[in-house]
Amino acid sequence: MAEASTELDIEHPDALLAYLRAAGQIGPAETPTIRNLAGGVSNRTVLVERASGEGWVLKQALAKLRVKVDWFSDPARIHREAAGLRWLEKLAPPGTITPLVFEDHTHHLLAMQAVPMPHDNLKTLLLAGAPPRATLLDYAGQFGRLLGVVHRTARERQSEVEPVFTDRGFFESLRVEPYYEYTAAQVAAESPEGAAFLRGLVAKTRARTLTLVHGDYSPKNVLVREGRLILLDHEVIHWGDPAFDVGFALTHLLSKARHLVPRRADMGDAARAFWGAYREALGPAPWAGDIKAMAVMHTLGCLLARVAGRSPLEYLDEPARASQRTAVLALMTSPHGPPASVERLIALFPEQQ
Image (cartoon, rainbow, N blue to C red; front, side, top):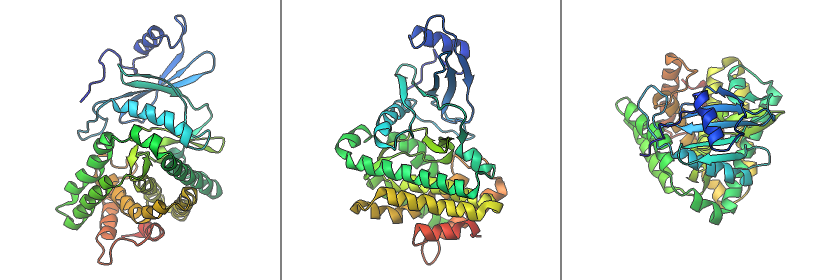
């Protein structure tokens, strides 16, 4: 595993300022405002605001992630994110990706343009019980369309895009092992059938190489500015199974539908709006139909992983996690089989006991 350089920790403002000057990224007498940003478990993240009004977000990958259990990943993954920024700006709808400013292979960091204020984090809005229903459905539709456009346009440019993102090592260390394999081990004694479901899902996922997969498609990685969504955090991007992105996104919408009881119906409708907009943006390509069944499996897998894996949803308390765990295992191991469609899963999960 590559080690991030010990010579620079960007969360120390004096060290970062000296680095930026020495690297020629800012003038020798320039003193920007530097502020550490909270919330990331896998990176140091810092906002640099220059006197010119230009803002950068710097990210430096950590070798050991900031979670309770041991979780390691090569910090060279930051350069996968840089490649993601370059390509997503070509593939995604205009204005939805923050442009890359510079990349440093020695210190495993990158800088991207900061999203101007004012803006809101989509996850924060949802957990606060906002926005109003009509706006919520609009955002959910944008969330689905953005993903569908990326999956479709990447597939259309497969000969260019796939060779850049063939390596799936970061997806294995940051998603397959902590979400599916670790979770399977955690539930094996309680539900051998649930563990087998997850292990089967891993095998199917590894065999599927259809298009570009973001790998971290979550409301926490979306900013809302002037009613438009902007996507962040691309370090798990790879060429693989697009249904993983669908399941990962639906997991957040459905977990919040279960958690936010007064807005349960609205959040369920947001999940439907996401799925409908995604399918419309994906279009009628023959391979698109293959996503439907796998999307159900990945949604169930991620719903369980976010309460029994290495990275549990922080807004759920222990009784809520136990309740979601029981509900997902019941749907996974039903005598009639898992829900037959995404629509059916959306209808069942929020009320599942």
